[in-house]
Every structure is written in C-alpha cells, then in structure tokens.
Image (cartoon, rainbow, N blue to C red; front, side, top):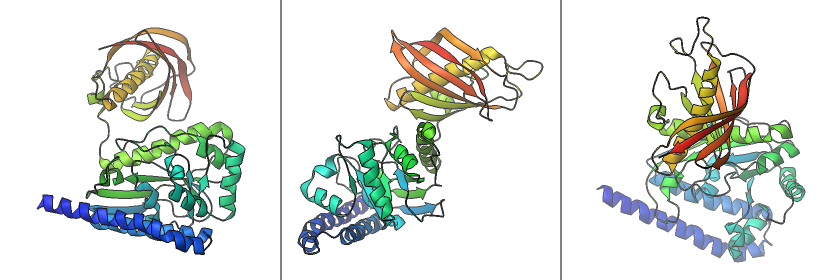
Length: 378
C-alpha cells in the first residue's frame, strides 16, 4: 500500500511541475502583450507558486505554517535556509505577494527564466555589481514597499543542515535601515531531493521568526551568525535531533566541560557549559579554577572538530593540548554560571589545530582569551 501511495505522490508531483513549466512557456506571449508589466508577472508567478505549494500540501504527511513574528508589514530582507528547489515557491504559502528575490547564479542564466525574473522586479546581480549598485537596486524594491528574499547560504544544502551564512544581505539591511526577517523551512529538501524530480510525501513546516535589526556595521557579522543560529535551532527543535554531546565527544564526566554545541559555522564554533555544584574544578568558595577555563576552550575546539568529522562520516579524532599562547584572564567563573565559548580555527599545521578562543559568562563578561593548539591523530 505504501508503494502505491509513493507512486501516486510521484505522479501528482510530476503533473504539477509539468503544469508549472508549461505555464511559464505559455505565459510568454501573454506577458509580451502585457509588455512584461512588473505587477502582472509577479502576480502570475505567485499564482503558479501557490498552485505548486497546494500540491505539496496535498501530498505531504503534514504541512504547518507558524508565524512567531506578527508584524509583517513594510520592507525587510527575508533570510531563509535553502535546501530545496521548492524554496523559491514556498513563500507563496506565507501569502508574500509583495516579495522579490535577490538572485545570482544559474536561474539568471536560463533565457526564459531570466526574462521573467527581471520582469517581475527581482534584484538580479553578478560578480561585476558593486556593493553600492546592489544597495541601490534593493532600495528600488523597498521604495515599492516590497520585501527582498535572500538565501544567505548562497547555494542549496546537500543534507538539509544550515550551512555558513554570507553577510552580504545583512550589510545591505544595515546600510538601508531595514530589519531582517528569518524564515526556517523544514522538510522540503525531503519532498524533492537535490538532483531529483521525484516528489515524496514528507512532513513540512515553515516558521517565520521574529525580526532582527542590524544597528551598526560592527554588529553585522554577529547578527549574521545569530540569524543562522536561530534558524538552525528551530530546525533542531522541530526535528528533535539535538546533538548528544557524549556521543560527539571522547571526554566523559566529570572531565566533560561542554554541554551543548550552539553553532558550527566553518572554522567558527560556539559551545556552552553550566557550572554545577558537583564540578570537580570548583574551590571551597565555589569559584572555578582558572586552568579549567582553558580546558573549556580546548574542549570547545574538540567538539567543533568532532562535529565536523561527524558531518563527513569520519570517526572522532583524538588529540591533546600542546601549547598555549597569549592567555589572558579577566574574571572568575563561579557555581551556577553558564559559560559560552567562542572558538575560531585560524590554521592547521602538522596535524595541529591553531585556534583563538574566548570565554564569556551569561552576562557577556569576557573571562579569558588566548591561543590554544591541539595536536590531533586518528
């Protein structure tokens, strides 16, 4: 019975996408008669997208839309994770008729698609477009009270996980004084796998998170990472696939000084650790020994390496601390504190990870910082 259902879903999906593709071709003479009027083209694309998403809803096991942000009025930059070709039509489910895409890459090189993208008012740019020119193009969309949709990863994720976000869209948001609206899309990557045309029945959820403002240029990178992390955490919460740190790390209590991996973004990682009353590194005044602060940074680096190994289906590397450099202590940590470690790998030489680490408490107070080096082996 399940096999019959899968065949039925695949056929329905194939028909839907066939209608979508034929409609784009058949609309061309109509669009030409309308002189490719922007509002008409955008409205017709919205209707076609809505049709495709209604088919996705029909074949999905579940289809949920959640709005955490209530104020959706006015221009903004919509930043969403990107794991499926369906992402470009998914926003019709949110009734975003007043939205265009910031587009670069293969869609702009398809003759018919290129014509529609430009006619609908989407922001098209290439490697020769300067940042000032791009801001000017986006501002023209905002002047029309449109939202601009961006996929900050730059390309589709192969496995559905959220990859590193590029900061360009967030720089634009800061320069033009508009908020960023994060959107988490889950399940569409399973509905249609990358490099496949077969539609499958899956659980789909689209969550519109709260707006984020970028107050100044100094905070662009932090807001970029924060937005990515909010979307990644929403995906994790929906999937119930939180990382079990004991399966990730070779350390075990009471020596384990990492509770959670908060973010992995290329060479950058954030981890957290709560100091509980039974921590063996607490002194009689319930103050954490300062060498333990260094160990927390070292284990944060180990957690980052282990997480990246897991993504590559490799076994966790063993390693040990071989060098400290320019370590500075500024404040103590005590029982009850929740510490957050920021670790950034700056080099890898002779099987040795060289990283800059910073350790903060829950109030954002910098406790210590410095360079650590860990030698790794299989």
